[in-house]
Length: 313
Image 1 (cartoon, rainbow, N blue to C red):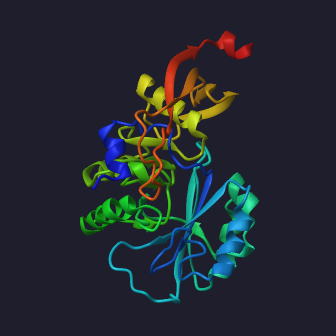
Image 2: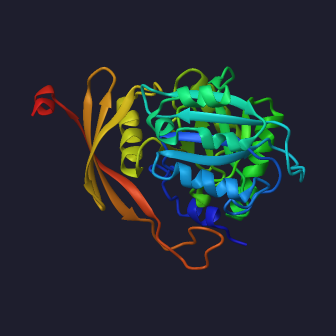
């Protein structure tokens, strides 16, 4: 039986510019089964889930549940949980972790400060500290949202964990089911689609070295979709793979056409024209949707390095 990920792969749908957007990720360990809307349909107290969802709204913080790969014991109250917060904006990237007993303590966080990249409240409220391990690999495995995430994501997470990759977690939702298996790597915030174990290991090796792998990359979650596509295009054109070398400093226009300004830490700038197109022929955007659609795609149509005089103007 055909799946949304099979259709996307068969039609060679581009993955660039399709990452979920979030400047800051807040991850809460929650073992056991997850429903489609995991914050309110797991063994986490649904009232707490609703409160967390409301607290994060409009703050640039995205909350997700995580669990270790493997069989998921159906237990309701873990004694302690890992919590992570990661800010993904270049030049201000950080990843902090904490261990807590009561997840209701998350409601004491200042979500707007977290969204701005201020980790002091996270550290004070939860006893957080900088993460001392390697980068986090978050593999979407929530089959209640789309069966592709379970069928393809869970084996990938298990293979990565069994091969010795550290800090591998299953995560509830990264968007883009049709690109399964999907992976988010923190702290830098780059997402990947149609991921395979060897490729993910290379991505993690690069992240440990402060280097971004562009192959299979959907974009950096810090930016909206036109910025994601523009930044990846500049990386490829300039041969620049240092993790925090590039920043999206301006986006002009609106769908279906944008002009995105990408800046290098050394002072260089590029103007990138991104056009929104439609992925054809129509195909299922999710296995849970029977209606065929034409997913939006971000096409880079021009890259131009700007002279100093143009920047001054």
